[in-house]
Image 1 (cartoon, rainbow, N blue to C red):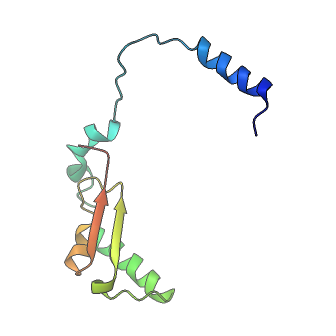
Image 2 (cartoon, one colour; image 1 turned 90 degrees about the horizontal axis):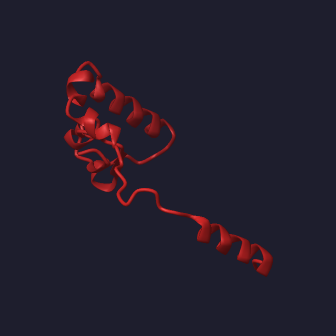
Amino acid sequence: MISSGVSSGIAQSFAQFTVIHSTVTIIKPFSLLAKVYDTIFADVEYDEWAEFILQYLEKAGFNLEPTKVRVLDLACGTASSSAPYLERGFKVVGVDMSK
């Protein structure tokens, strides 16, 4: 439980907070990169990387039957890294903040 002294101190801190600008612009640097990502990373062997990961997981004892496995590709960009898993029959969900 928060003591009343700490609680009032927090309230005072919030009371002293002032807004300097009425609008905030959030720059998403990877949104800019998304436009040229595939060109920059054209030489990356995503298929070899996917094969490495799948072999590693198999050696660790994971059952990698594509109909029973889902792949979550975080920060997937243009989904180039997801494609090898799709081609092998895995269900893939890609999440990225860039546009």
